[in-house]
Length: 328
Image (cartoon, rainbow, N blue to C red):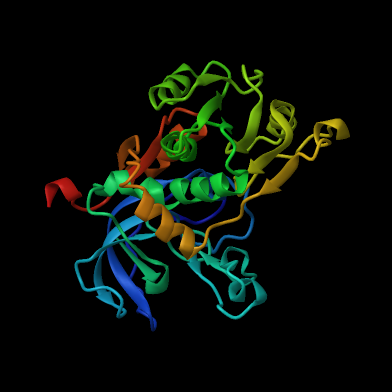
């Protein structure tokens, strides 16, 4: 499913198989998550994608050939971070997520909305056996970005999650496993998302414009809405933190300095590191994280993006391509 120009529908095309470069593996794609970042690329809100482009950066597949790290038939996951230089000041100091030359799956590199994909074996992760293909896919971006955001938010006992979608429904489970109280904020009137939050153990769920019943220690904003930044700052205590987790956000409106005063911290999270991936995929089966997924066929990728844009996906959307784990 190919994006040929921003704001145009994906087209189903048959493309030649690319030649493998040194260190690359060819994968038979089994499932690929549909991420909000895919939607930002599709809708022209991220401005420099490779075109034409195969979207998708939450890839679960089996190795067909290539590389040395994995035997053929091994099931692996491919995340957003697809390549780094290894030599810049960020790569040398454990901050490869900030590499100036980084290449991203489904943006600079063709991704997983396809029957096959090619990836750098250094940026592939073994998938825990307990996860079926579709349920594993959201861990590879929604899970990873959520996990990194939770680390940046600190270890406060009361955490707010603004935008209760794919990432938040995973983060909520991690936070609850650590004994924290979770407060979920959704689009006004989104009762299904609020019900999901409560079912996953949140202490409270309500509209994003509402004040939570308790002062928060930290908040993570997953929704791409800049107006939520002042709202989150109002909700956190002095010394608390607000983490912006999206790759794209609408402009943040002006707000009075008193919202930031009191040693509140406002920061962003960019991308992920391979260490994040290894840690989350080790943690996931121990929590255990259970992902809520709505499955679409590969040819229905545009429909899945439409549903995501309309706020109709509760949990995560996933394209299934090959034979699922449960069928093998």
